[in-house]
Every structure is written in C-alpha cells, then in structure tokens.
Image (cartoon, rainbow, N blue to C red; front, top):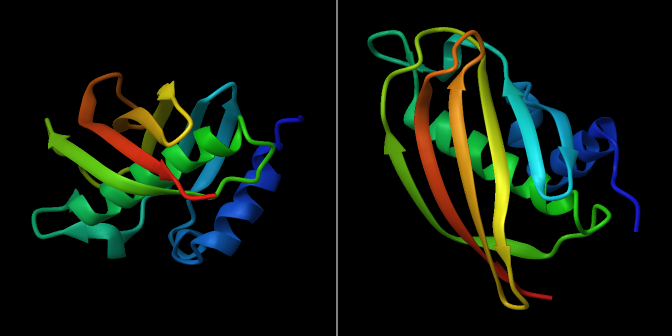
Length: 137
C-alpha cells in the first residue's frame, strides 16, 4: 500500500471537500498517520478583530486529520468525523496557518486523532483539537 503524494492528497481532498480548494489549503506532507496542512492568509477567512475565524480553523483541523488518515489507507478512506473538541488557546492574526495532525489510535470502527494549529511563523500552539472518526466502510 503506497502513500499518496501531497499533490495527490490535495486532489483527493478537493474532490471530497470542494470548499478546501477555494480556501487554498494544501497538504505539505503526509505519511504514517501524520500530516501537515497549510492554510494561506485570506481576508475572507478573518473574523472581526483581524483573527482567523474559528470555522476556518475547525475546517483546517478536519482536513488535516483526513490527510493523516489518507496517508495510511493509500488514499482510500471512508471514515467520517464523529466528534471534534476544539480548544482555542490564542488567536492567529492575519497570517498563514499550519495544522499538524496525527492518528493517536486507529481501531476497526473508530479512529482517534489530535491536531495542533499554529500561525506559520510561530511555534506557539493556537488551537488544540481532539477528534474521533467513525469507520463506515
């Protein structure tokens, strides 16, 4: 089973979630249940106060986790998000955002993951996400 390349993952994700293409999010790396996804700066993803919006960060976390899953399933994954707990630790002000996702445990029916989100030019975690996915196929 081979791991899809980042451009292949971008194409799979764009087909499955077309909204992501409009945001310009791209997979930077993905292998062995770990993925890094970049969301470029876009003014339409900001909320009042000039910070990246919660919905954009939650969507980025979901996409990053899916990329991590696709990296261990040869790009064929039929699981869906069942829970997501999001802790906003600090704002990300008008800049690109990086999400690092990893599979914590992969069972037959449930997959548990964690996503750390930060501004591209910072090591400080802005958002911590835990998520559970349900395997439907």
